[in-house]
Each structure stands twice: as C-alpha cells, then as structure tokens.
Length: 281
Image (cartoon, rainbow, N blue to C red; front, side, top):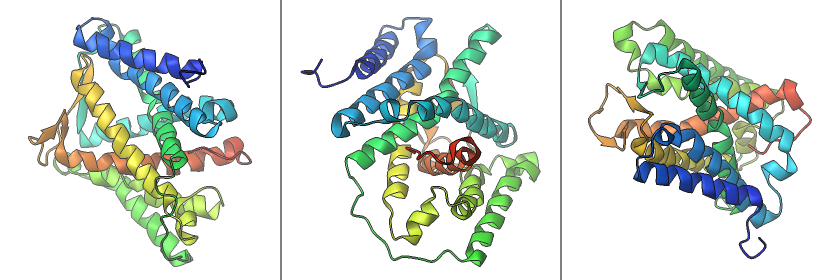
C-alpha cells in the first residue's frame, strides 16, 4: 500500500472508474446504465486520495461529516436546476431504467456526486498551488455594488421562470449565473467564505480554481456520459448542432459558472448547518 502511494479509498475509486470504463468498452448491460454514478463515485474517492497523498490531509480524512453532508446538499441544489430545466428545456435523459425506483436511485446517486466532485477537484488544484500567486488590485465591496449584484441575481433568477416558453429556452445563461450574483453578496455580508471577500483581499486563487475545476469536471462529465447507455442529451437552441461529445459547444461555458454557483450555494447553506466549521469548497 505504501509503495502504491494511495489509501484504500483511492484504490477503490480507481477500481470503480476502471469498472465503468470496462463496462462501456464491452457493452456490459445493465452496468452501462450506471456509468455516471459509478465513475463519479470512483473519481471523488481517487481525487481525495491524491490530495491526501500530496498534503497529508483531505476532505474525507479531515472533515468526514462535511463530506457526508455535501451529498444531500448536492442533490438538493441540482434539483433546483432540474426545476429550471422545466422552463428552459435544454436537456433530457434517455434510456432510463424501466423501473421508476431504479431511475430514482440512479438520478439521486448521480446528482449527489456533482458538488463533491467539484469540491475535490478544486481542493486538488489548490493543493497543487496552480493559482497560488495570482493577485489583483484590492477592491472595497460597497453596499451599492452588493445591492446591484443581488438585483441582477434576482432578475436572472426570474427571467427563465417568467419568460414565454419560446423565449425561456434561451435563458440558460441567467440560470448559470443567478445564484452567483444573488448569494455571493449575502455570503460576503454573513462573513462566510466568498469570492467577493477574496477579491476584496486581492486574491483570485479560489475563483480561478473553481472555474478550472468546473471545466475539468465538465470534460469528464461529458466524456463518461457520451459512452454511457443511460445518459442525458441536449436541446440547446443556439449552435446546438456544433457539439463536443453530447454538449453543444456554447454549453461548455456553463461548467465553470456551475462550479462558482455551487460554491456560493453551499457557503450560504452551511451557515445554519455548521457555521463555525471551515469548509473545503
């Protein structure tokens, strides 16, 4: 074990990823129905073990309660975006299991891995010090600026919900920005973690790490999804025919924003949950 350099959970993670890949290559059904949740569970475990190896501490080993809490919160947050999709109708799921129970298990499992995957990837990037020296000019966050962001967030939140159906399909951009504008000022005022507070101190490491983590996870999401039997497909109305894997090229802009949005949502939610505990996101 010491020679390999990974803890048991990292080896289990690598095995799960390998199993998902083998299932796809050999078309082993019904296992290809579960590629997304199995691969992402493996990814989370593997990345956590890599972080542990690099810095002798990780989310799972240092903050196990926080790690567990992330899964139901991830599910809850993604169900919000599923609600938005009822109006914008930009994606749908195909080849779902015939059993409603199995479908519910698969979706719950898959949605629950989204935020932990982004968190672990962000943690790895910060452990590798990818953006550690990045600095910008400090900026004081005035009340007027914060209120403007909240108003903009409210407009972005309501636009997809109140637009006529023929226009709502074009409202994906507000969906992937609304909670950043709406919640970041609130997090700043609550003195919890916030990219605005980092900006005020002239630091961009967290923001850039989140954006890159979202992009990395986006590539892996679409890669594993493309080969899976049960998967999602897109009906994006703008440049929908130009795709990388299943994702129309314009949709790739949403992944980095999603990471920042989940960061804002999590930090807002954690205030009443464990406000005194430092988060790894």
